[in-house]
Image (cartoon, rainbow, N blue to C red; front, side, top):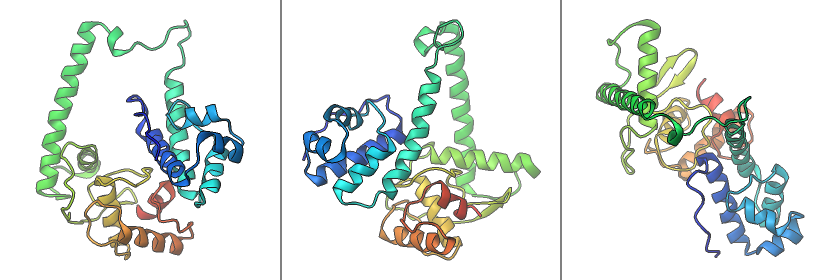
Length: 258
């Protein structure tokens, strides 16, 4: 197996996820970069950049790697679609302003500005922790407000749990209480409608609760994307007319949130 160099810390997590899967596929295939060049039509130097996070591979390169690796390409193409969106966001952020200068980084901002931002972030984190604490104590319990304001507060608190205000604990099974808001279903653990699931965490707990609510048993809502959850997702996708690949991505989230 190849001894891969660490990926850049600045690499977006959505791109990192794609690159990690491409590396694993290359390792399983046993092919070197020269062999990949001859079998895929993309140069050795191109694959070196793709597999080290220096450049985003084109969709066709991903398809070719899947072909030579002997795997069905759907999962990789879903990851590529998400990674491509992240790559474009990063490229847009790096575009110079009209006067030829780039947006200032943290190091370039005046000290007073940085201090003000830091104070604001700390206050927001403290408020988010308080809201999430209330949510965990009584998830989706009415009484803290009414109408749209109360709904938005609850959804904001739920989003905080998915970003790690309180750490997800593997091995624990979480309760499911489905709430309908603005025509969509939520279990209170995540508000995502686009995440491609693979790693354990709150997004997986959310999907498992929604699967159970729709009558597709994923096992316990433990945040682990295992065989039971994959089978439940495939059954949901097949009934909904989606490709039954077992991958929760943007299209499957649309069905889960109905």
